[in-house]
Amino acid sequence: MKPVHPTIRVLANLAAAVLLVLAIAPADDAGADRATSGARARIVKTRKIAPGLTFIRIVRRQVPLRAFVLRVDLSKAITLDTTIADDSLPSRRQLSRIVRNHDALAGVNGDPGEGLGNTVHPFAQDGDLLHTAGPDAEMFAVSKDESSTFLGNPKLKVNVTDQSNGHVFTLDRWNRRAPEPGEIVGFSPLGGTLASPPSFSCSVRLLPQGPPLAADPDGVDRDYVVDVAACSEAPLDRHGGVVLSTAPGTDEAEQLLALTPGTPMRLHWTLGWPNVFDAVGGDPILLLDGASTQVCVSCARQPRTAIGVTATGKILLVVIDGRRARWSRGATLGELRTILRDLGAVDALNLDGGGSSEMVVEGEVVNRPSDGRERRITNAVLILPGADPGE
Image (cartoon, rainbow, N blue to C red):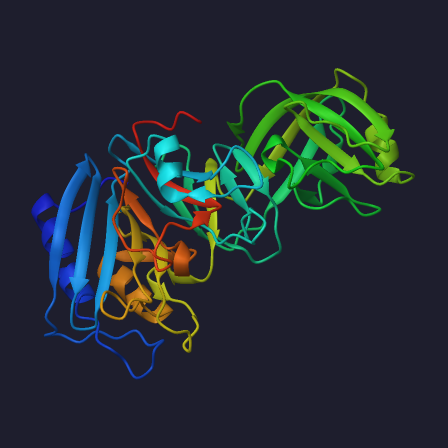
């Protein structure tokens, strides 16, 4: 992910991009991608936070529009991390607290929350899968070594293999609702009280034997050993491990109950992308391989948050204030895409917006959230100094 252009050229391109961003003019079609030259605008502040991390504050007073950008070079000694707000679900905290709790240099809000303290889309942190969700989830991910990024509509798969005989248990869900007859559902410590093992079920508890590891050719593996298998009216406690549950009286129950204590098991989950430990969802994809994607053309200007990747592999975290007539009225999805493209993005994903749109840099909330205060959010995208201690 090292830049291929000389430093002088990179700075020139960035300056030109900022001027283009600030030239966005009001459009008759609120969803259109449009820029008008000659509009008066200026960079209010550019600040180097750490090697590889630059904070840019952008203002256009005529619209008005205020944008906040973190430009991230992951080839330097910094790390991009995704995290839920708490240790487990339900998960809700202010972004400034999440940043402080992780000793992060900076952070922005991530995937929308579904209202119960969970993310709308699948989510992964430090090699642990938070939960599965419906099909066609649009996601952004970064490899464990920070050298590659991924954007698309991945197909999430979760299974557990009995290492003693090679039998594969395909899981229907992860930290997501009790099993129906014919289903096997997994529950991990991240599920907390929001997604806990069910009562009146047949379950097996697996205890971890090591950390998550990158699988070949893609996904994450983690080894476990069977602790206990039983049917009970009461939920089977996780005790720091994973519980697989199914409905009583089914073929799946018979298979789980046949597992004996000490049996080696391997959990595997994958988005189809290699070496991915951190992933966040959003909607919609704005840019993919430099091409515009279909977005809502009637959606109004709103506060926005997005993540993008440039052709040279730099990460862009962008927050746009909105719902404040004299400060910043926000952006349509089309205008957000234009801002990202003019900053050099070739891939980009819209994250949660509205009152959740927020950026914290060095412990300070640098934008003005539209609620007039920090909203409690479910998850965040952080920039850490050095390596990720969770990995």
